[in-house]
Image 1 (spheres, one colour):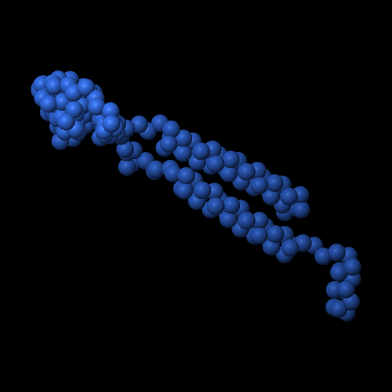
Image 2 (image 1 turned 60 degrees about the vertical axis):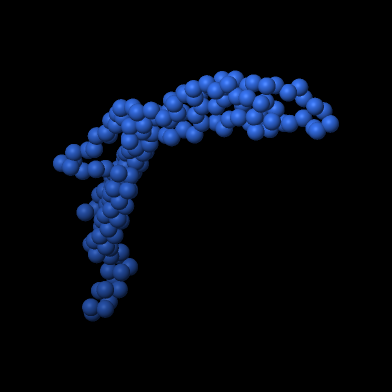
Length: 187
């Protein structure tokens, strides 16, 4: 092979390596987008309702607040949480008038009780749709696999370059000055 043939072959190998590397990096980025950008799943979260509002402070002992005799309970509740796998839903309910606290602080003498709403109820759990897994007949291309192929291809190109260089050096024709030295040694 002539010197130009080796140069051309080397340039072609470098161009192939660049194209394969760019395609491989593109596949890595595309695969990461598929992994992180398109997968959706329903997540069940047990929402802890907000704490009940604080009880108003008791006035200082010097000031005597007018004493109420009856406090009527008035219940308020959060929305129902999502249905859990065990088939239950929860919510949090509290008395807007805080009658129990007022009674314990002896601000009121009686509580007019109202029926406290349920905070737990049964529900029908619907499991989230399963994410389809790829068929085992196809090779799963992950970023690691693509990077491994790029490394392997790079090593093969380096090996070819070394082999062609060695072959070029072996087949290289000696220069005229070297030919003269060889003729002198032979004589």
